[in-house]
Image 1 (tube, rainbow, N blue to C red):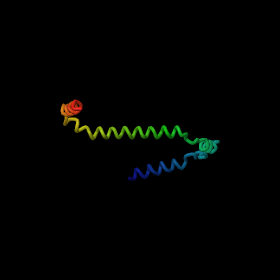
Image 2 (image 1 turned 180 degrees about the vertical axis):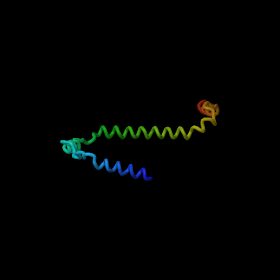
Image 3 (image 1 turned 45 degrees about the vertical axis):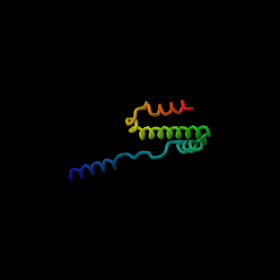
Image 4 (image 1 turned 90 degrees about the horizontal axis):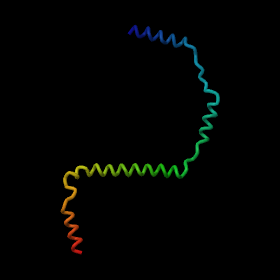
Length: 96
């Protein structure tokens, strides 16, 4: 612990002796900031519509992904070309 205290004191002393830095803003900094604030334009209706369309597309894709995840366990339970449905539809069509 004594070694740490001596090192700390040496570092603090060297920091006190270091030359100071200039801490003022560069020339024209304030005018550049003000110009940037006032140069911002309102977004156009096309930009807003494009942003909303993109968000709705992402939402629809998330909903489709959720539906696919919920249906994934049921794909193994039945065969995709089950003849029961085909026979029922065929009988209904031929009986008309």
